[in-house]
Image 1 (cartoon, rainbow, N blue to C red):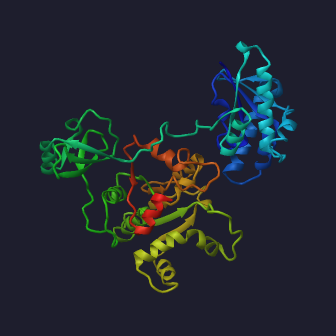
Image 2 (image 1 turned 120 degrees about the horizontal axis):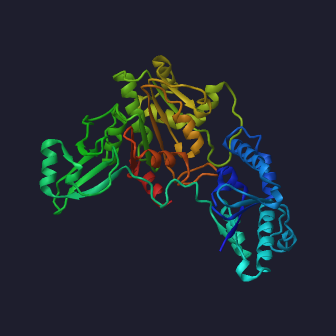
Image 3 (image 1 turned 60 degrees about the vertical axis):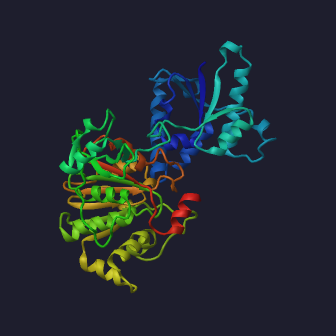
Length: 444
């Protein structure tokens, strides 16, 4: 049975090309959705960019015919703009407010009623597609099918790549790894592995012996970790995953590192410690650049007074907190004096990164889960020769209105680069900030 998909505004603003994601079915865009898109096109952010892109795409389709009469798409489906929402007055008895969401529901209800008047063999399923959970709930309440838009998800299952795997092996193979420092992947099992993936090898017979190895860039061997230092800028890895993180952060042959973990797992602290060592101690990089997107948690605090540095300070404070810990500063203003004297550490907002080329720098992007796919592409294409970039965040703590755990920029990079030998990833699973922080991250 063919289907009629009615798209909510948030679907188009999340993915301007979503129109073409419904195969040989009919796509309907209510007129009120176009009004909402039009109201967003002046925004100078990702939502505004997508609104303008949607406008261009739909305008380009006008050459195929009159949009309100239905036009054929290249994928075999069709598109039309629906002007009729007669059922709106019927729904006002249920949903009192005259909102745009209710007008979209009215379009769906009207089409649903029209389809039920046809012969059974000619009926089409009418489905609302929305990123708004309440729109889907209200649609279900009035007897209309509703779905989330999932084509923008970077993983098909509810599980992102962890960057490591536990593997039980024979004791003689484990002994060979201890002796030689490497083993062939063929000695483990016929199992798919990714370049730079960590393997926690354990005794298959239940013994206490274990070892951590990392898949070589060529994908043929498991090698011993290169990281063997007791501490980096006073920071010692407290668990297996933090050891893995240091391995990725310090290796020259891995210019892209992604780290995912809940609050308090040490993502920012580990990255800053590694960045300070490679930029200040070994001089491998000329500068340490730390940036994060400006996305408020809860209600925005509005405009801030002062110069750019003063305006950015509240947004960048989590970075400064970690730097104060690493430099062991005690007095107010002491950290600012240290950073001013060093001159090789730059704390910046991602707002100012477009158009830049960043060579020979250690780049840390914090809170990357609040970036869209387009924004993360913009950032990665700024990375210059001999630079290293670290993207980190917690996909479960997203403040962006149109992103979730599976379609944000950080998850996108993790999944797209897991097959690449120049990239490495690890999920930090154990909180080390405090017992309270770990408990809160787990149960709240």
